Length: 272
Image (cartoon, rainbow, N blue to C red; front, side, top):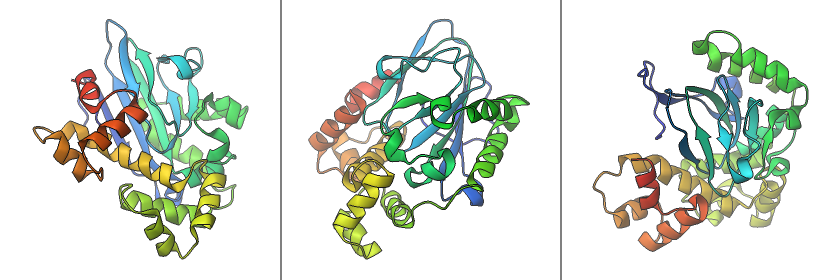
């Protein structure tokens, strides 16, 4: 499902993203919510890498993950999805209501108490990261009217944020530059903009993000391409690739296959 924002979402199922309140903007890219209509047969959904760390809560029955995501299953209802380098599969049947937040990599430690580098690519129970506090988060967010779930989630994270130190400034500025350039900025341009050496930037990223700035930039570029696929229309693949910062169509297909496990055309057919 392609991300879209709607204040009056249709009843048959929808996905929306909401900007964080200003006090959380240094840690959170967006809050998101998905409602999937009741489906008679299990439906296979490919979850793509997005260069974020996500906290995911199910207000409905939990979907069932496959392979590396097998921990996503009932009776558990809250999870942390690390900055994965490969897509994974979840199966859903029946009605689903999923609430989440996509954390900036430098904002993970202020919100969850551990840096993104510690979480890595893992998919874990929220309890494994924050302990018994996970039950309180579930109760605060999931209990109550469904339409207020995102607001309650933001309130919980604001309380946690007020008890912690600010994110690493150098990493935060670098992440901002990468996102502003949609993952297409050269690393030497980023280091020049920050007035730091490549080695210093690398150290900050490995300590706080868990990957190199180059790899992070590739993931951001990939995420932007995935988000725009739904609007590709009749645009040739070669033009789409160039518009998203890839050297050519072959480069785009190889990069997409590496992160998604399928080609762009195969992904389009999965979501047709």
